[in-house]
Length: 312
Image: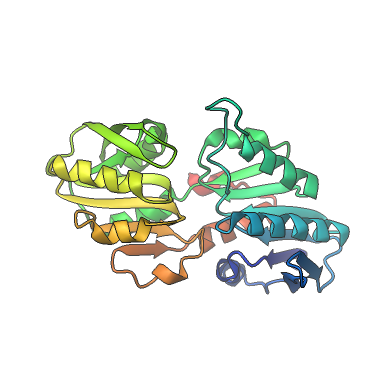
């Protein structure tokens, strides 16, 4: 592992340290600060010539700052003669704009993919993309990890009976089916219509949830409107208990207060792909670590082993 180097920006240093702990290596020494006018300043303080370098940096809020830090770090590492640079982006921001669903709008996910490639990244490692087709936006290898195993382990320990996995919309059916298969559970879908970019209106449930323990699965929670709406619909359909398993806890705006006010939700279970220091002691939010999964993937990439074997 002497040719492996791990660096981190300011987005999520705690996750980077936990990944290094799993791998048994030291976090790379780099200055990632600001000049007096606010421009990002980066300096790699150790020799990384010929090394296999991984940069841990989710593009979580503030997304522009964190993305720009990542791009500049990659450029600095490339100019320092790193042999290979892998951008480890646990949460890939700007992923929601992945197609032209309206006239005169950008495909920002493609733009970010281009920026990462041009900056000098040789490979991308990410977790639960908002849309699988984003993998095709890159002309460099991309390893796409799934948090399903982490959630399955947690819910298996809870020992819930009569489980039904619920997709909060039609677009999440594939993810919900994967959970249902692993849990040997039923499957339900909430049919809804979006009334604005931030608000949705639930219609009805496809599937049987009455008297069952429902687990809503999704890739991210932002303002929480979709999740809370799904919880209320399941409550009205007389679900026995309601949990939510969401990979990326963006938790912007009124999300946390909405979780607080919803008595029907037993627990919101999320991973630490995004720093969640303020919510670690929240009584209804459970945070699971993604560090070991990312650490194992990094080790396999470095050793040229199969990453897909992680999901067998």
